[in-house]
Length: 351
Image 1 (cartoon, rainbow, N blue to C red):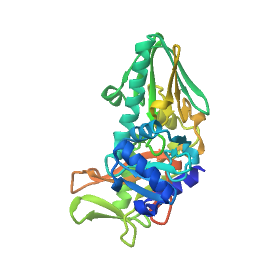
Image 2: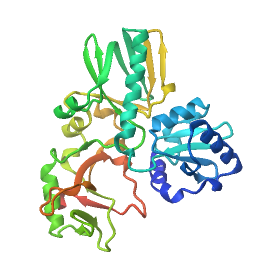
Image 3: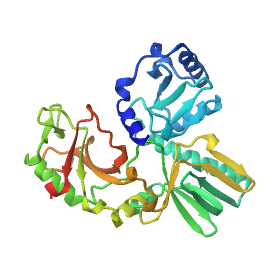
Image 4: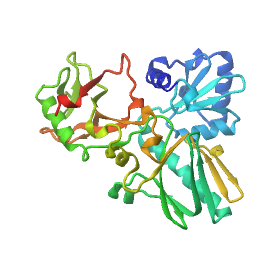
């Protein structure tokens, strides 16, 4: 089902149709959503006759909370083909999924996701100053006892390489939690960690020594290098297979995921209904939690990717500042397809 989700999500751009393509039943549901949530008609699209796309840059957690308040039922992300973030369903079986409209999807949804956890824990602490917080997931639970406070880690964590987004203050010390939304996310920018890999790749690519790849300055911005195939089509990503530092059992993977602060990971696009306060215990429904690499599924392991980022194009010479960045993402998020135009390069062929 994960593979079906990834394939379906990639081809969603092709699948999007106008409002009128929806069945009469789906149009009625869509009209109810538009009226109840203040969503304009041009942000309602059809995935198929009975699956509605809300195409909006409002945070997914906000969209999901609104759908819940209107009485729609949440669909598990693993069972909702068309969006790896999951969706909702009406009583008559009409599905509703959310996709971001434009560029604001980067980062905004993640911050909103963190905010709802902080706000809900603070609300619970106002009623129960000594709280037990439990992130409940199918694979296992994260349990934090004697919680007395919570805050964002923010810039302090970035400067120290921490992975935690939130800090739970407990009588036994602080506990860090990394919050990841359902759907796509990155493990880490590895420009510093894998600098030799970046330099080896760029050196060979700029010399035309990687089969199937040419680096060409953009016509409208000579600072920006485009990664093109031999027919002049832009690659969406270039992936590096079999990086030795990402082999099974590697300490690098543990460091990349959990960091020096040994943060726990809680994955979910949270909504109001995920939080239940019972006496002095706040239970938080969570899709998945990870405290160790042993909790990884096959698709969670990282792969190195090179991608274009025009905002990083600041120089007209050299390999740095040319708009090509190197990151790692879960390998299960890689969505191959006819339009994806990805290139896979073996690590041994660039080093």
